[in-house]
Image 1 (cartoon, helix red, strand yellow):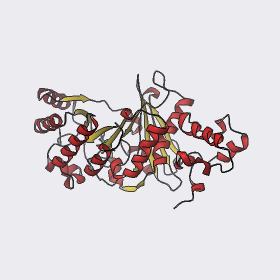
Image 2 (cartoon, rainbow, N blue to C red):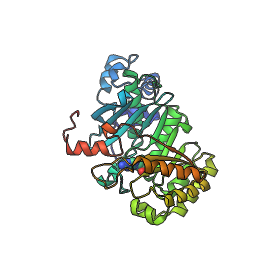
Image 3 (cartoon, rainbow, N blue to C red):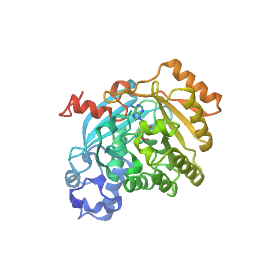
Length: 356
Ligand code: SAH
């Protein structure tokens, strides 16, 4: 167990912030909490209503990580950070500005134990769980960065959060749950604007359905029969498609929230009419929306993206079967914004974490 005093501000319980400044009166602690969650700033020196001594004492104790790499793409509308925690774990976070929303893609673990064949993070293996503070600090950091440098034409705060960075959130349930509590009850984000994405941890889907929040659920399906799915996603052996679909149905019925199905198209793997037909049946059973994206090739994985004709035919097939599907363009190609990619580059090209 780490001593509370050794933890950064975001790693403390928001109700236990007096550990940061033990001799301060309660109203000061409330002010610090406001700075952390309601109006985050990059540097405690910017906490203008706190006395100078207190600001100084918070220096270096605010964030649970430092910025290893920061990159921008898409004319400044996509920003990516590779954060590093003091013990060396890497945490990837991607910010994307759209017209009506500012979406943050966050990590729930450093690395991932799921070993999906197409995912760069999976090839690296598991480092460790992130704690709730490290998960929420990614949002606070993005909000602080947006305050310094807004994305033109997009909301100046994170409006939507997706757990589509590194890690499997439902394999880190207690910290996921606590981070959702802090987002919804402390930062005051709408539960409906938060999406938990899972590769199919069935007991976790049940638990999340039983929580009091209407968060969204995305299921990374990628294959619509057990043989193909197990070849891509080892966890499918433990929780095969029938169980996964049942869990999805339970979630939909319990929360009233429509699930989304993620489908990363891989050339010659899951881009054929047979998969389109089977996928449509599953989506129909779940009343789910399908998000199709094209594989983002990474140096560690064998899969490629299909050509445009194949993608168009696949989307036509889904349409023909009555499925509700959207092809989504991926953001940030030039900054390795796909899962785990920045980490690969940092490991192979910039071991010292210098700016690229
Ligand atoms: N473990 C969770 C969340 C992290 S992955 C999950 O599996 O849903 C977030 C999404 O990125 C998943 O849908 C995943 O399948 C997808 N993904 C991983 N590697 C990819 C790649 N190289 N190209 C495109 N999508 C990828």
